[in-house]
Image 1: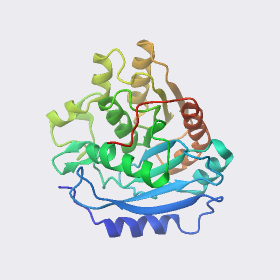
Image 2: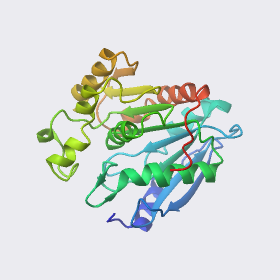
Image 3: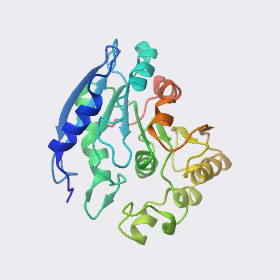
Length: 272
């Protein structure tokens, strides 16, 4: 069962976003309660100013300890506004304290994203169901690459900032996985090693700070993908594993998603 207090998550997130200049963007708050969850989970959706009709959609998964509005910062809104009519809609679902966005003993977190979050966001925002990207930071970056691997061909783009990746189960953070078997089911690096291309047809983004503890694992994933002939837009920039690093690169990552989504048509993502 998914254990959380949705009302508290909403309240904390709204306090974090209070007073932020949205540069004309509209933020919509709603809850999702579908077959992939055992409760109601809050969502924050962003419709940029001057959005095109049926815009593409970016699903952005937050990091450990964050909420659905933790990344709705001034830097995010500035970067989004720079895209003008190319800007996608975005949905930021709440994923618990440390779910790591995968199906596990305390809930079907991965199913929730693929079968509840995306279809409801497409319908509520009138987004283009054939142009969807999945992305995230830290825990959410791991979740984006893990979920996209389980739904090959579904996403136009997959992206991660400072993805929380590990080469072996013994290196993982406490609580990230239920046990060794759970880790192996969601071992992104091992799955990439054993596959010719786990992300067919998708544009890939991955960035990490020069002082980030996940730099080695993220570099390993990027190198493996490139060795298999899979293009990945990979960057190591100065910084660590923190909000100041993530906020400093919204311009680059959002521009990547806008470009990747502009000419992409994938299978519809509104049916779950």
